[in-house]
Amino acid sequence: MASITHLQVVDFGPAGPLRCQRCKAYVNPFMTFVNGGREVSCNFCGHNSPVAEEYFCRLGPDGRRQDVYERPELCCGSVEFAASPEYMVRCSFACGTTGQQNKSILHVYECLCPSRTDATHRQQHLAFTVSLLIAPTNECTECLRR
Image (tube, rainbow, N blue to C red; front, side, top):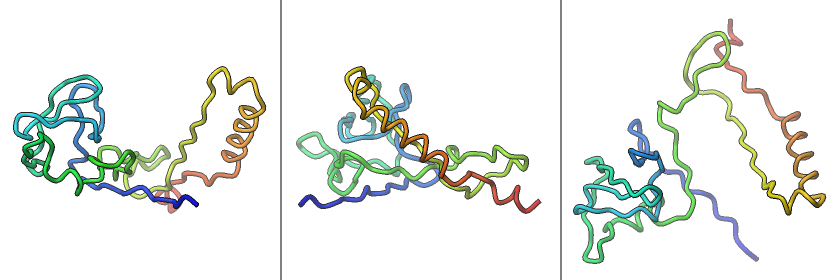
């Protein structure tokens, strides 16, 4: 029986995770570190972006970071990045505050041509619609106090 593995949460603090300056891709196991570890080469667009001093690590003789297995974002296929303040959503209600709000829901399902021809697509669409109807609302606690 396969075991369930939970995603590791990676928190880079207020600065947020390392990202490509050109295409905004997040740091991942397929990016390569160059220039002695001072820059990262994006695996999507090829652009070299500087590495912040607090994230810097020397490269080993094989050209890889020496801490690659200590950082989930560099050795795991999937991680969860803690959102930095710039990505915290402002209240869309009347008060305009920032802060702790209910989580939003993102639901993605495949709808390529082959899957749309069978009942799976209809069942996924129905399940998605029902989940939206029963999902909690994203109300701001500051607005509710007024």
